[in-house]
Length: 480
Ligand SMILES: [Zn+2]
Image (cartoon, rainbow, N blue to C red):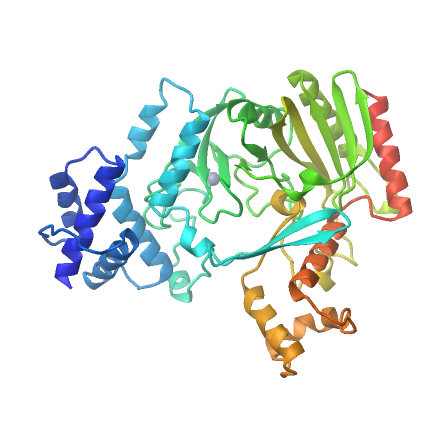
C-alpha cells in the first residue's frame, strides 16, 4: 500500500509541475502533503498509474489515516479537492493576476481547463449523463438526465454540514466558498470581473449542463433583481467575452432558479434550441429589430448593433410586460406581490447584440398552487422543479431517478413485466401512448418536456393566446 502511495504522490507532484500549475518546488509540495497526511513519504517514480488512479489511491490512504470521516462521496470529494489545492495557484495569486489587467476570453478558457484538470468540473461523472434530442414543431429540443450531482448521503446530512454555521459563507454562491474545505470547494478558483462598474466573480459549474457552463456571481450576498443595472451587466459581459452567452434567472420564486438570495448569472458557450426557433413576426424600428418567436415559452427576440438602443429596447419589453394584464389569459401582474418578470439571455451574433426575452408570471391559484405558468401536476412525474433559463431555452435537465425508471418502464412495456410501485407515477402518461405501434420512451419524455414548457408559457399556443401575444407585441413597437 505505502509503495503505491509514494508512487501516486510522485505522479501528482510531477504532473502539477509539468502543467505549470504550481510555483512550489518538489520538496515544498511534498512537505505540504506530509502535513495533510501526518506522515512522511519517499517519492518513487510512478510506472503505470493514471492521474485519476493516483488521486483515488491518495484519497483511500487519507481515509485510512483518518484525515476525513465518514467515507462518503461528499467527504471524499472534499478531501480530493484539498489534494488538488496543494498544487494550484492560491486564490490570492489568482486575484493578483488580475489586479492590473481585465481578464480576457483566453483567461476564462484557461480556467476551464484548470477546473477540468483538478476535477472541479466533474467530467467523469458528467459522462454518465444521458442526453438526447427530439424533433418537435418548435424545432429540435435537447434533454439530459443529470447524474453528476450526487444525491446527499444521509450520513452527510447527519453531519449537518449546512449553511448558517458561524464562519461559513451565507450561501453556496458567495465568493467566500472559494478555498472552503467543507463543501469540496478547496480547488475552486474565481476570476474577478468588472461588470457595469461593479465587482463580480466568474467560476464554472461543477455539473456542466452544457459546454463552459459558468456562474457569474456578485461580490456581495445580495438578492436577485431585475432592472437596468442587470441588463447593463449582461451586456458588459458579452462585450468583454464575445463568444459567451449569458442570462439571468428571474428574481421571483417559481419562475426562476433555486437560489434567489444571491445575485448571479449563468453563462457558457453553447447554442440553445431557442436560437433556432422560427420567427412569427418581425419589425425593425430605427436601430432595433423586434421578433416574436414561435416558442412554447412566450419570447421576444431583440437585435441591434447599437448598444444603447439595445438596452433601451430590452427595458422597454420588460416594462411593458411588468404591467401587462389580461384576465382572460390568467395574466395578472400584481396581487399582494409582483408576479411578472423576464428571463433575459444575451449574446453577440454577427456583430449584433441579441437578446431572448422570455416573459414570465409566477402567480398561483387554488387550482394550481405550484404555479399557473409552471408545469401542471400531471407532468410532475417528469419535471416538478422550476423552469429556469436553461430549460426555458429548450435544454431539459431531468432528475437522475429517470434513468432507472425509464429502463424499468421499457422492461414493463416490452417484456410484460409487472409494474413496480416506484413506476406508479407514470401510469397515466403511459396510457397516452399505449396504442402506438412503436414506443420510443425517450421521445415520449421529450414530448412531455414540451408540455412542461407550454405550461410555463404565458401566451398559450391556441388562437386566443396567439392573437393576444401579437397585440402585446404590437403595443411594444408602438411605443418605441
Ligand atoms: Zn451568497
